[in-house]
Image (tube, rainbow, N blue to C red; front, side):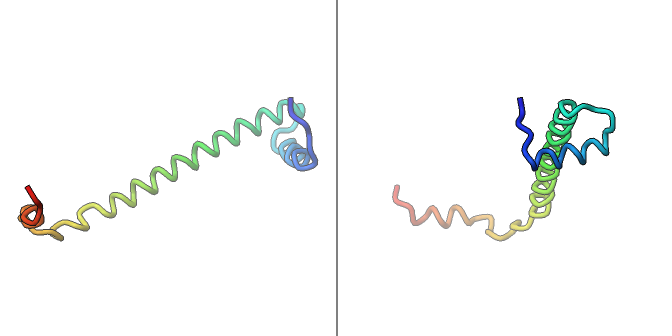
Length: 79
């Protein structure tokens, strides 16, 4: 059960133009499904942007530390 607030009424009126002939109840369901789909797409886009950013960093730090860096750091460690 959903209470039709003024804000929801505006959304349902707009939805009825997109999907004419549906009842208010059907429009609520349609909007919920559309909202879910949009949220899923946005989440997938965020994942892809993060992956692209990580790919862009690939190899950036290569050669920053020499091959014997860890051995030199460990020399000062107590045993």
